[in-house]
Every structure is written in structure tokens, then in C-alpha cells.
Image (cartoon, rainbow, N blue to C red):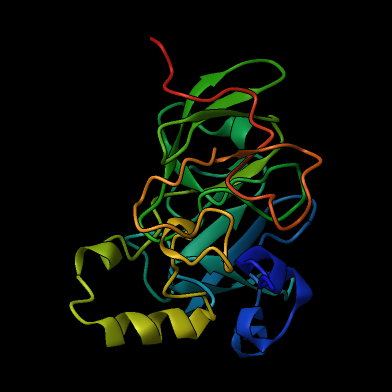
Amino acid sequence: MGKNLIQQARGKGGPRYRAPSFRYKGQARYINAKGTLNGKIKEFIHCQGHSAPLAQIEYDNGKIVLMQAPEGVRIGDTVEMGDNVEAKKGSVMPLKNIPEGTAIYNIESYPGDGGKFVRATGGFAKIVTKMQNKIVVQLPSAKTRMFLPDCRATIGIIAGSGRKEKPFLKAGRRFYAMKAKNKLWPQTSGTSMNAVDHPFGGKSSAHKGRPTQSARNDPPGRKVGKIAPRRTGRTKR
């Protein structure tokens, strides 16, 4: 009798795959307010749910929000939010008002959603082209994506860029780092499993002779790998 795949066990639920969100300090997202707001950085907070340090900002309307701290700011610095504010570190403004080539992060997918893109340590994006109805932004992966002109973003580069430069060295350090966010680790590849555990498992060699593509209507026990891909193989250039 077969066993549940990892994605099946994750969908079923349980403490193994549940993030300890009750330990998180809060959500790092923009507030929706009209006009221009001036804020002051009160302190920097470490949150195990975020890789970047969070800046606690108190705006002049009395609201306190958390935001990924940009490089080069300190406690007591002032930041602004609005349409017509100065393009300095920590300022939040629409993409249509940000100059081309400016480093930005925490970009909204749609106006008012609080920020979805470029939120990890050391990350930043750049505005490539500004059009009337869309803004072309180059993401840290070097891919370009189009956003609406009213989507907001923060000026600067997210702090903590050297996080990946220090190696873990030991499996124990990696274990506790993953446990803090309840990430599934270590992850075993399907080809290394037994046939009872995974469709790609079994035999004694890495080449199993079974395609890694699966059809859209395949049963749950077979729906692994590339699910209904439009194309496979290397891209011809």
C-alpha cells in the first residue's frame, strides 16, 4: 500500500506543515490612507517569520506599521508615504512617480494590497520603462514584470543583504533555522525514494524510465513533476 506524497500530507494539514505564526510580530504591509503621511522609525524588530529586519514606523495619524527596513536608515529617521513625496530611502510612493532606475522593494501586485513582490533580505527591483497604463519592473531574478502605475513601492534596498554569505557549516544549524519557520527540511527527491513512496522512486539507478510529466487529469498519486506542461525540453534561442 502506498504512502501519501509530501504535497498530499501538506494539504491534509497538521503541525508538521503549520507555520508558527503566533510567534510572528505582525504583518509587514502598507496602510491605506489618503494624502501624505510622515512617519518616524521607532525601533527595529527581529521576526522569525521574516528574513529581513522590520522597522516599526509610527505615522502622524497615529497608526503604527511594520515594514522591511531599507539599508542605511536608523532609529529616529523620518519616512514619508504619499503620491508627491521625496524619493529617499524608506519613502513609499506609487510606481508612476518613482524615477526610472531607482532601487525599490515591497511592490504591490494590485493597488492597495500592501505589497507582495521583493520582500527578502538584500533584494531590490528597478523600474525599466514607464508607460501610460503600465510600469515595467525588473525583479531580482532578472525577469521583467508589468505593474499598474498606482501600485506602491518603497525606495531603497532591503537590509540584511549578507545573510546568505555566511555558510551554515553544520546540519544542526540548518535544522534550527528551518525549524524557526517550520519549513520542511531535509527534502528528499522523488528519485531517491522507494517505489511505495513516490512515482519516481524504485529501481537502483537515478534514471527510472518514467516521464516527469503528468496529465491534468491524473489521479493524486501520480500527479507529480511537471503537471500538464505546455512544452518541455531546452529552449531554443
